[in-house]
Amino acid sequence: MVYYHLSVLATSAKLLRYQGDSLYVINHKSKTPLYLQLYTQMKKDIMENFIAEDKLPSIRKIASLYNLSKNTVESAYSQLVVEGYIDSNYKSAYTVTDTVFSNFATTSTIDANVPTIKEEYLYDFFPARLSKDSFPLKLWKRLFVKAVDETLDFGAYPDGQGEFGLRVEIAKYINESRGVKCHANQIIVSNGLGDSLGLVAKILKNKHNTIAMEHPGYSTTTEVFDSYSYKIDKISVDENGINLDVLDKSNAKLVYTTPSHQYPTGVIMPISNRMKLLKWAQDKDALIIEDDYDSELSYENRPIPALQGLDSKDRVIYLGTFSKFLSASLRVGYMVLPNHLMAKYKTLFNATTASVSITTQNTLKLFMSEGHWESHLRKIRTINRKKHNLMKKMLQDKLGSSMKIESQGAGLAILINPNVNFDWEKLKSEAKQQKLKIYFAKEKAGGEWQAIRMGFGGFEEDEIEKAIEAFSKVWHQCLMGPIPSSEKAV
Image (cartoon, rainbow, N blue to C red; front, side, top):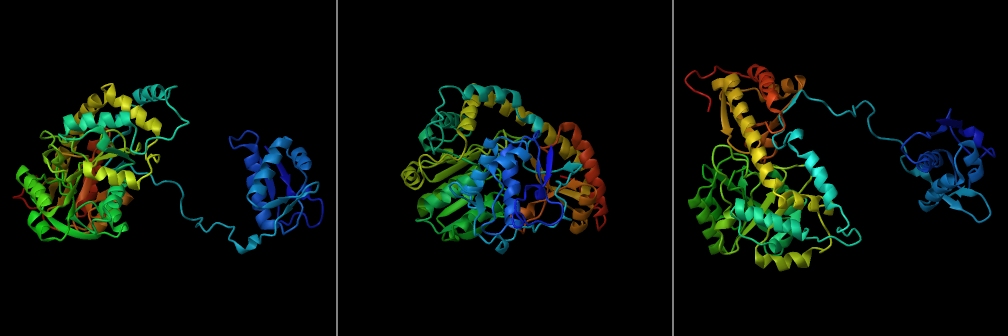
């Protein structure tokens, strides 16, 4: 590592203006390119210590003093020229431009006392994640190498709708597993639910200015449509899902719903209401956005077939994701558009703008086409069924009748509430003190409906008992009334 005081570089009294023992530090062992190290420090020096027309040391002098090649120094100076910090005058020295850098803040406004290290928790009950070991990393790496071969054209633009081979595999899967009726040309690969919702909001904006949404419901959906200036009609949820009588009184001709596992209450829309909802859409010339976000993770019953499969009038826009079953980090979602909306989609969106990298898409295509997806799904369902059942048992054993379960039997979390008067603020503070990360439904459900979202998917199975043991100690400190002896935990 080489250190030099700036004063060593001075060729005139006005060359460098600095305070204290300023210096450049060039670390020849660093992974950061040498020219970039030099450029970064010289830029800072110019902004803080130079004035217009000051001359910089010659390339030869910098190269000699810092044991650098002339090409390295030239690259640093060239970058400074391109960005407008210095001028290059033919047959004369590099000089500082006349930009008044003192007009701009050059010091950080970040509070140095605020810790920058990520806070660590003993147990994190995140309600929508899988454990690290559940991802088939070795297989994925092998398929990735296979996907990135000479047949992949990196010189061409990707298909903005999604790679056709992947769309074919998605269509096969949802046709067979979810009862969705579609072909590959109706499928659009997206960068997750938010991306899908944004596409839908833009496609429908000219025809619809109001959207009906379940309440309580998923706040991200509200945020997306609100950002496109839609009016939001909140429709209450009962034991059968979205309240169809209230929906019928709304002026909305567009509705967002989670019929197979309502978020966050967990209720399932029965077949009779599904048929009524489709009839409503037909009568009102309306559209339904069906979010099928975690339908495959059902532990007590067979997964409920998709509402879209019952639709014979092209009234349902179907949204799906791989986040709950494969990986949230890959950010792969998809939607199925009714045929009559495909022309609108192709008019609005650039056919070469892909939301998901071509390498990820092609790897996922192989993962599905070679049969790994089905076996992985069975594995994930089995693993998380065990975790779900263990957490449910531990909650019942440790919290007893002081707790009621609001939602269970599917997804990656069990939602609970106290059965007695409860100090919610104390729960938050005590949990933080004991390094437990807990999550609340109110944060993602429109700010009114409350429950504690006890995620189990991110834990290894042998962690759950200890995690609930630690949580139960905090829970019992927050009870403010007698535990009802006649009531049993659900």
